[in-house]
Length: 299
Image (cartoon, rainbow, N blue to C red):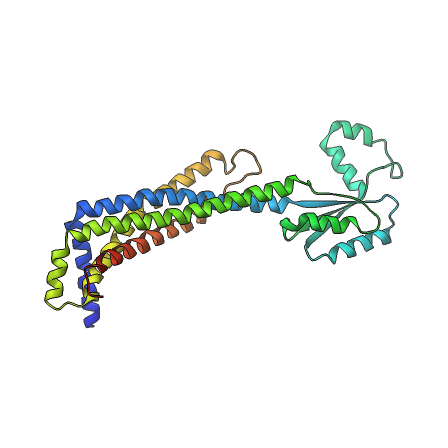
């Protein structure tokens, strides 16, 4: 009960200190706000790049063309051999008749030419659509499939697929480094801003030490003050994230540059990002206050 009363008093003192030293506290809050807005933009960008990559990777397909002479038994054998490859996630068979029907629907010219074909005149190949588990190994998987008997050829967008995977990986790493770097910079700026605040109150700390207050009882109000500053500093970035991202999603129709590059849906995505921002603000505020007050204590 006594500990609870001490904590309640320290919470009260923390709130009082924020408003008593509002000009200095406002500098810390502004610092957190600006940096968290940039952090929010980096997190949103990183998350969406991850989403773009996933959507594109989900579309990566190896098309296996089977030789025309292949029998039903050969088709079954080819499927069985493809299934033994560890990187294969799924296999879909598409007969040459189905391929022809799709081509006829896609173009009036194809329809005019192919409508006169009977089953024996169809020169197209039966195919297997193969999806892989790890797109970084798509080239190795395609090479193994090529070696299977009665496989005519294998296509998967050679070169382009590898380039796209590499580009998205680089972009994702850059954004992750930016987020981490911004968090470190935020912590550094806030520690120094709060140091100025606490420096102006070192006399108050000295008096508490002289009357026998423990280090923890001196530190606790400052840590709570940092928590309050961090929370207040994260409010505007959270509002910008929730409403700003929702507006962006509506204005773009959830797509950027093309129909294939889709944004993550605003909810619950924006709430997750807001939670991360609040957590960063609170942790950095508390850490900054704790670190700044340490030099004035006997630790």
